[in-house]
Length: 134
Image (tube, rainbow, N blue to C red; front, side, top):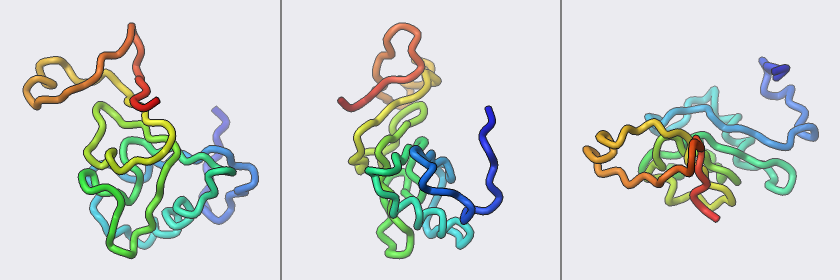
C-alpha cells in the first residue's frame, strides 16, 4: 500500500500529515507510560485538531480501559476526533468527546453477548462498522 515505515519519530514531516492513527497499546494498558512511548504520546496530545485529525483504535493510548484518561499527571492525555471501538465500546468511551465514534466488527456471537449481558447494536445488512454518535 506504499505506506512508509519511519524508524525515527522525529523524522515525521507534520505539515504533510492530515490524519494520525493511534494504535499503540491494547486494552490491557495500565499507566504509567514507558519512557520510549512518552514522546509519541506528548506529540499526540498537542496535535492541533484543525490541522491533524486523530483517530484512535479501540482505546486512546494512555487511557485506562475503564477509567479513561490518565490522571497521574505524568501521562500525556490525548483526545481523539474519532474513536473506533472494536467488538464493543469499552467503559472508557464515556470520556470520549470527539466527533465520530464508530463500532467496528460483528465478532460477538449472540450466545456470548447474552452470557455477558452485552447490549450491542444491530448492524444494518452486512455492514461491519456502525457509527454510534450522530
